[in-house]
Length: 115
Length: 147
Image (cartoon, rainbow over all chains, first blue to last red; front, side, top):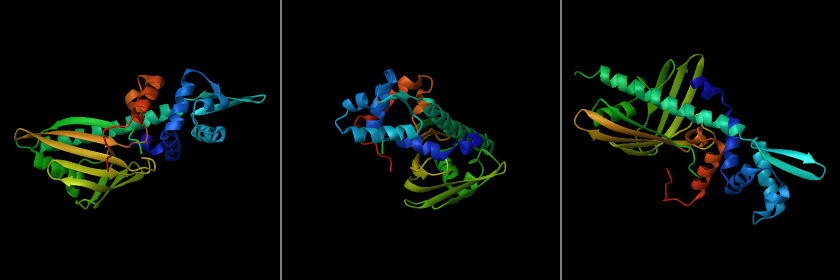
């Protein structure tokens, strides 16, 4: 299991974590959950400039959570949940790590205990 | 920082509370169990602000975990940061809470928080559930700020 932890790119993890750690970006992900949207459509729901929303969208794209398709002048965005799945596996790995550690602690305590 | 990634584990351990606390805080005893591979070296400066360092070796790898004690309240409570090359840039936080269960046993609750993802708990529920939970994590909450 440790190998999984080791081999999970921490850079990628940082990108995903950084992306979902901002309320505006989480709101964008939620907007895209139901269906794809254009940048303009997404921006309309936020009390900030189109440029500001675009910046947040770029962070989501860099983390691989949003995919952009350009058709003519329209930039259409869709949700890309795979990176979160990878990160989910990573967190499961930590649970296994502690379960295993505590199994061993329990065994050590038991074996040294005169019953 | 929003606390979104949390692993929580409960155990009943077959030793008195004071002894369990020692196994969590004495380098030699930590060395008996704190690694899934090969051997482990532990350096512990057990005081608030003191550092801990756990180096796991084996399988051709050396993995260093470092941290700082945030709370040291023997034999009941231990809180420390937990940083490895794989915990992301924000220090994760491990909280160990112990409660005596009779003279011979101890209830342990371990909480590993600030892990850089919240998805594992909602893995089965999938993406929709996860976003709902992220929403919940957005709500102002009752002052839970580890560290």
